[in-house]
Picture 1 (cartoon, helix red, strand yellow):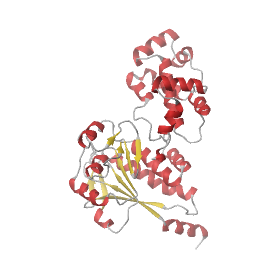
Picture 2 (cartoon, one colour):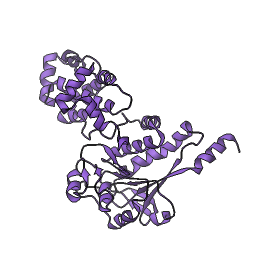
Picture 3 (cartoon, one colour):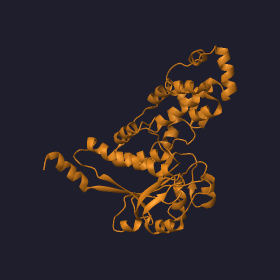
Picture 4 (cartoon, helix red, strand yellow):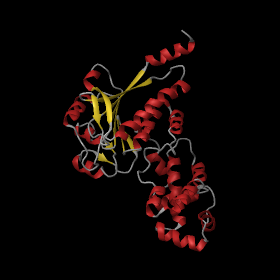
Length: 342
C-alpha cells in the first residue's frame, strides 16, 4: 500500500456521523444545503488534512420507515430507516423544517423518536422550523433558539419555555444549535464546520460554494442592503451593490449621482422618494452592518474595523454605534463576538 493510500485508510478510520432527518413535506433546501456543505467538506479535507488528523464526515439522511420521502416541493428523497441506525452512535443530528412557517408539520412519531434519542448526539441542530420538532420533544426547554422570522411568534406562543430570539441567522446554546431558514442552513453548516475543522476550512468552503460571505450567527436576518432593494425598484440596485464594494471610499452625493448616471439634484430627489431615506443614511446603515460583521471576527482591532467599514477612525465608529444601537462597539463585541462563547 502506498503512502497516500495509507493516509486515506487512516482518515477513513475516524468518522463523524451526521444524521439528517427527513419527513413528508420537509423543506428540501433545509436538507440539501447542510448536506452539500458536509459532502463537499470530505473532498476539501483531502487537500487540507491529507494526513487524516481529523475525522471525516459520514452523512446519512434518515426517516422513520426509510425509503422515499416527498418534500414540500414534490421532489423525493431516498432515506435510510432510523431503525437501521440503532447501533450507530450519532455525533451531529440535524432536524430540518417544513412549511408554512406559522403552522409547520410536526410528525408525532418522529417527535417520539427525538424524545428518546435526541439527547444522545453531541450536537442537535434545528434548521428553520425544525426547532418545532425539537421543542415538542422537550429538547429545547430553557434554552435560547431562533427560527425563520415568520415562525418566531408562533414558536414563542406554542413553547413559552423556550427563549426565542427572532433576529439571529443562527445561534448556539449548549449542544442545541438553531437557525433561520433556507440559506441560513448553509450558515449553520459552515459554523459547525468551523467548530470541527477551524476558521480557514469554513472560509474555503464558503468560497467553494460561491457565497458572498460567511455570515456570523449573530448577524440579523434582516439585511440593510436587502431592505434597501425592497424599499424601491431596480433603479438603485446596482448603486447599492457598488456602495457595498466601496464602503471605505469617500462617498459624497456627487459621486453617487455620477455612478447612478444622474445629475446630483435629480439623484438626491429620486433616491429619497424611492428609498425613503437620504443616501447618507443608507451609507451609514451599510457601514454599520459591515462593522457588525467585523466586530464578530477575532483579532480585529477597533481601528481596523473602522477603516474596513468606512468610518475612518474609532471616534466616528463609536458615535455611529451609540446613535444607532445605544452601545459602544466594544459592548457590541462583548455580547455578539463569537457563537463559540456559549
